[in-house]
Structure formats: C-alpha cells, structure tokens
Length: 236
Length: 236
Image (cartoon, rainbow over all chains, first blue to last red; front, side):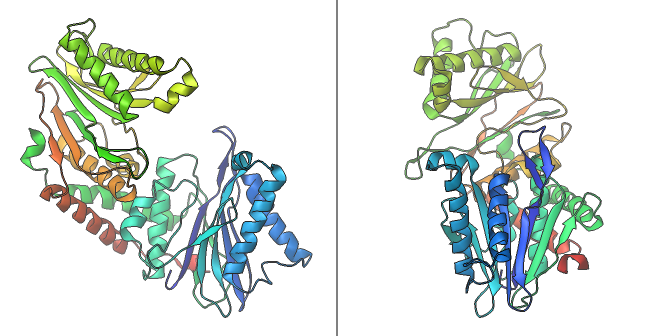
C-alpha cells in the first residue's frame, strides 16, 4: 500500500455448482503517464458487467463524467458508485429486491496530482477508503484467506512481500472453497509510476504459484511440528 | 481421530455486538469405564440449552431413552437429533420460522462394545458421521480456521498434533472475528479409554496458548519471507 497496490481476483462465477464459468473480474482503465484505475468485482455477474459496460461506453461516446475525465480517485469512486446504484435501480425500485442482484467493487489507482487510493464501493453507491490502519480490502469469499492477511500484512510492507502474502491468502481460499477457482488474475501497480500494468494470468500449471502453494503447505506442517507440545493439563 | 477425539469450543455468545456473554458450549456425559459422550453446540443459545436440559432431565428422571441407556453412538446421535427437532417444533410448527432458532450440535464419543464416532447433527434432526476421508467437523464460525485443518489434519494424525492443529485453527478464528472469543474449552478423549476427561479452560493469560499463538504468527511471517520471490512476469 505504501509502495503500490496488489490486486488479485479469481475468475470463477457460479449459478449453482453445475453452472460454473470463467469470467474476468479484474479490469483496468488508464492513460499511461497520467492515470491508472483498476476495478475488481464480486457478486452478480450481470450487474458487474453492466457497470463495466457503462463505464466503457461513457469513454467510447465521450460522455461526461467518465473515468478519463474525473479529477481524483475520489471522483472515480463516486462515478463507479453512482453507476452501480443506477444499474441496480434499473432492475428494481425496491432496495430489498436490488440486493438479489448486488455486487461489490474495489477501486484502486492513482491520478496525476493526487495520492494513490483504494476504495471499497458498496451496492448502495457509497464507499470506504483503505488507510494505514487497514491497508487492504477483500470482497467475495473473504474469510478463508483473511487470517494470513490479518497476521502478516501491514501498510509499509514491501510490494513483493505483499504480493506473496496475497497469493498465499488466495491459495487458502482456493483450497477450502470450490466456488473460488483458477485461473487467477494478478496485477501490481507501482506508486507514482502511472504505468498501466498488463498483469499476469495464473493458470493451473503456473510453476511459481504451484511452488509457493506447495512450499506454504510444508511451512504450515513444519510449523505445527515445531510448536511446543501441549502441557499436561490438556490431557486431564 | 484414529487415536482419539479433540474438542475445542469458544464460549462467546452474542445477540448483537453490545450483548456479549460467556456460556459453555462443550458438554460431557458419561460413565467411567463404560461410555463417554461429548456435545458441542453452535447457534441459538436458548435452543442449545433446551437440548442439553432435556438430555440431563431424562437422566435425572430416568426417562427412556436417555444418553446412559442408548446402546451405540448412533443411537445417541439419533436421540440428540430427535431432542433438537422436538425443541424447535415446540417453538414453531413452521419449518422456515424454526430456522431462526436453529442450532448445530457435534456429538462425539464411544460406548463400550462399539467404535468411537463423531457426528454432526443438523436442526432437522438428521446427521452425518466423520470418516477416514473427513476426520473433523466444524460448526459455527468455521471459515477462518478451516485452511489449516484442510492442509494439515488427517485421520491417523497423532493426538497431540491434532490438538495443536485445532488450537491454531481456533486462534486464527479468534483473531479474525470478534464474535468468537476466549476463554476456550478444550477436551481430549483417548480412544478405548472410557475415561471422562475434565478438559481444560483456556483463558487470556494461559501461557501455553499465548506461546503457540505468538509462535504461529512468527512461523507465518518467517514462512512468507522464505517464499521464493515472485517471477518477473508479475511486474509487467
């Protein structure tokens, strides 16, 4: 977070266990040298695709405001929040009913003249911003991967450590929940670079990801073995 | 599981974040030399207390069937499932409405002449049994603690390893979710012993639990550092 932003998304969508597909959930916008904006989505696929579609459409037709005309990351988050809210209102005027089609969106990036920011945008169109105290967000299936982030991640963490930490967090989720699946999309933005990264797609035969997944299992098993033996009072 | 059973419960109940209390969720029944039955509960506290109350009441009044008269662990699970179903039916005849008061119960133990068993009893009164393939169950807030169990736990694992693994799993949940809180109740049953263990209450100043919690954080941080550096293609 201090040095940049790490984004990792899976690509599995499901409408029940026999209706599983691969869709990209990590999208980038930007102008090299001037702005970089990444969106990660979780939730209803039609809704997330509609939001991305409207944002891209506004760029194509040069409708204002759009992601290349907003002045700050705050305005970008506002635009995305309003777009999401409008998409849901188009489905139903009933806010309860809207929740059946809801999604969450992480928005991260940097616009020249401003700081790098990371926002978590809610279906209601409002949002929160990551800080030095809480330098990461998760959306979607977040629980399995949270313990390693809670223990290891911190604001000033070097970017390559943060990337490894995020990959391991995702690997834990992949192992414990079949609704999350490979391939993954990973992307690292280096602060003040204003470069639009291509990112990397991590497939099942990716040698680096396979290696850290295996090595992490070994770390955990060996770590368990190195724990002191339980005291006698556990055996009463 | 091959050598015995490890039970760990927290003691936090909540009805909203400003209504938190300490209640025991791990209960034992048994006759030394003849039978040991442990129950772990998760869900609505009034329901779980009613189930335990009915089971104890049947023993006090020597009503049949009761936990000291059932012949097998299968019959014990049946009795507990029926008791739970009856408690919920007393609240409402509407099965949807019943779910607002539902709970889950793990039942583990051994009765002389039979194998040690572990059951997961559902609010509908039906249940599933742990096997060599899946030698553990979690109820309640299960996701944060699941990755370490999925990676490390196996049927033939020595009991003290299984105990350490379970404690670390619980520690991860404690750190990531405030609805789960100390003290913990831990209990180990050694197969074919027919001893009713007293168990151990783990409080905040427990030196062994504090030590493994700290050492586990160190293991994870060091393990992260030892991971190979991300390959160049992550930085494109």
